[in-house]
Image 1 (cartoon, rainbow, N blue to C red):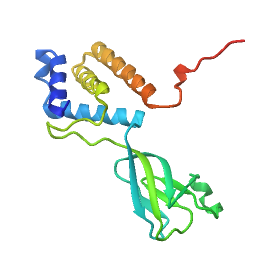
Image 2 (spheres, helix red, strand yellow):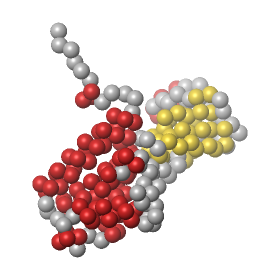
Image 3 (cartoon, rainbow, N blue to C red):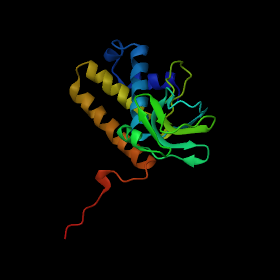
Length: 190
């Protein structure tokens, strides 16, 4: 599906009366918000950033950065430490503060690799496609309809779509994560 077809699906879910209230721009914004929410929660988009160190301790993270899952300097994976621990170490570690990655030791001329989960590309053109797996793209439509119903003061209908969105998101999360969710843990009573 592309942005145009997603938008048309949203309009088809709304009544004719509701369709007059919402612009394409507004629906596109809701579709992009849904895509960001899904990507931040599920962390299914991975990227690698490479740079050569220049001796500074601070390196700017990519604009699409959500969270790192590994940091490597040359061939060695680095451990993360808290910012408050950074002054007490003589080994190479890293920490993240705001939009920057900090190295605890000088590493001039070495290759730094940041493996991270990234935000999706924003859909702007009608032909743009979402960065969500096709089997979960309905979630984008469900979220946009939820926002439309909410804006139109149809709160009961909005809650129905919000619940569907959360259930679909949890389903996707189960399929894209290796660790069990709290709802999957079983407690055996003795």
